[in-house]
Length: 71
Length: 140
Image (cartoon, rainbow over all chains, first blue to last red; front, side):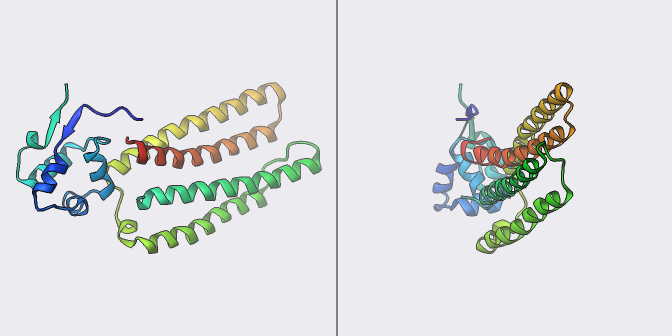
């Protein structure tokens, strides 16, 4: 298994808190595929800074409310 | 399974099938010559045509099944994993070519060198799609 990046995220929680937003809907809003959203949620992929900002903006929160650093 | 992962599987099947056909023909020609056959243009053209025709037919079938995904450009993760898969498969090509050159330096068989280089190219193409599937599933 590929080594997971030490970056955590709350994308799934935020998505569910926003009216059960679907992975496809989020993917469309940030300009990636649904598979990429799945990979982000599972911690298999750390999005680019641009996509990270896009995700935060979709949920109307700051970057650090979505992503964290696991020591 | 995403559209691009499906296309990677299809390409593995097509490239493997075409490669097996090509080397079966080369094996037959080599047996008749009692030596390694050279690159035969007719087989080479047949190999390329087989890939093109099979790709068009099978890719069209997959694209019809998921037209939205087929139209969408690769996103940042897909570009990254495609680049990484291309990089890794390059090592296979390099290894095969160097092995062929070393073999040539000892045996001076130019036909074998050419076939080894071509086989390395085929293998690296197949491996590239294999690595893509690996990265799609395991993360990049």
